[in-house]
Image (tube, rainbow, N blue to C red; front, top):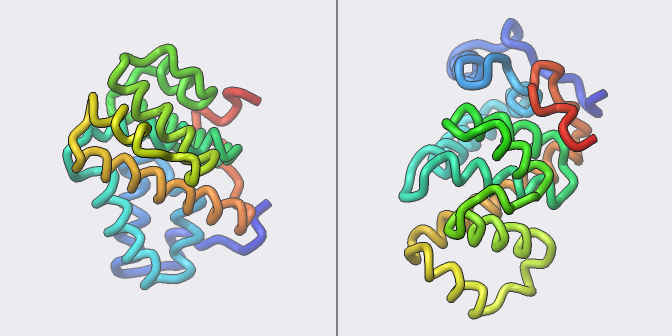
Length: 183
């Protein structure tokens, strides 16, 4: 049970209702994180711009960003975000077995380039102060500096989301097909 009461689409209007409907189109339902953000409309609008900018724009494919998001969340033991973004990985064209591998942090399913980003994400999530020039140099074998900035931004974003959903006690929706993977 969430620590706070959550909004529903019928209780909001205008831009917030549009964001609810957009989430329903993208996910097939309104995730509880959307329902929580709707309680602070200006924050929800800003978060929507930030989130879509990070996940839907840039140099890296969305599928890889969803894999990074899933690995960060699984590493942080945030089942809500790990399940949500494993599901989003499949919505972005990824295979279900790869999504499950991300959620279980079994990176053998991925090619060398993808694995480099995912291993970096796992290490940075566990202890960001452990990242060295050597880690960045390893990434540079596969990614441009701009892409490395994108990877770091996805890591940053999902560490924040992991905290947000944990602090508010948000529960994973029953509709999420990845809910019980790894339990």
